Length: 209
Image (cartoon, rainbow, N blue to C red):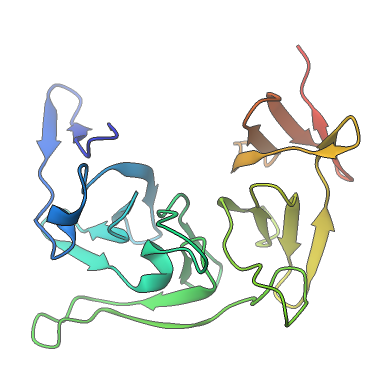
């Protein structure tokens, strides 16, 4: 995977380059298919989160795109990109935006394969805030969603409410890039400048080796 949008598949012997189709937004950007993340869903489809063109699903034969404004643009600024993709326990997909998506089979006649609906809303519960977008999301072993924001810590969503977990160094909030669940079920954070953090059951603490 490269930022220029070159994706390669390894079959055990040979690397095969995956050629993305041209989209209506493609010529607008210098690297139209720049890839931020790759995700495999419960049906075996491969998803690609791009820097500017939204989310792309590949079923092994063809591509489908979700290029709604909420997955290509920030509410108050330029493109944030699809930096994280997760499928929740009910089969909905989350693309670090204010919506969640119900995805089904391709329909070549209607050119639609998804519907969307509001998800959590503002993470902090304040109806007047614009706290919708986030950097990364992970699903834990209890099927709860953990949402990492850039400068406002981590939020856990249990399906009904959110719980806030600050992540700080020296009393200051640190910038977060990613959250990841390992094979043991442990949650990890990737930060901008302060290394890795691990959840100890109560809080995120810096990993020192």
